[in-house]
Length: 273
Image (cartoon, rainbow, N blue to C red; front, side, top):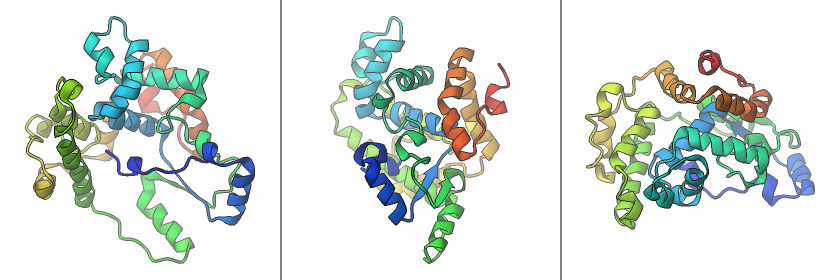
């Protein structure tokens, strides 16, 4: 669902030697953007497993269900379409602990493939303050400021991507997608992303969305949901994990939190333990 995720970007830890990295670091104006590790992990689940994503279901979902679900149905084993957040988290933390090199780059800690202790990044920006930080980078480079996208423009981009995906799914083999309520998955994704309010989630009819009527749908979405309410949706998912698994998550994200200035054990996530 993220346009960035569709780009084929090189991974420093895999595609460059130590000498390359040192030379690159000296010669380049290097910039790194990071994200709250708890938010990043949750986003990885939404994008790759909750939102209709047949590729990740097939490559990772089937493997996760086979390992972490007792008495899994044949359909789940064959399709990998209904991985839960808890199963996803178990897979991520276990893979990182025992076979870290096998962990998919979207889920592995940022420091593992961006090497902030070895590369002299001139600026480390955060996704939470992306607009301001990008302007700062451009200012350092002597370029002009960019105009920050409005909420409506962001919603347009999100819905346009969804419309394109829905059109693509119509032409796919329906063997596994046919067992999934694609429209309900999209609604749940928009809700957890903070684009849909509780009042709108049931009545929001996504089935007629096309690239030509995106603006009409944008007007239906709520742009007034507070950051606190958006955060609470993430928190509720983490609170659904057991203490043992949540403690593993805390250890998994700790290095990134310490390196980039995020809370290692946020009170709103851990205060119920």
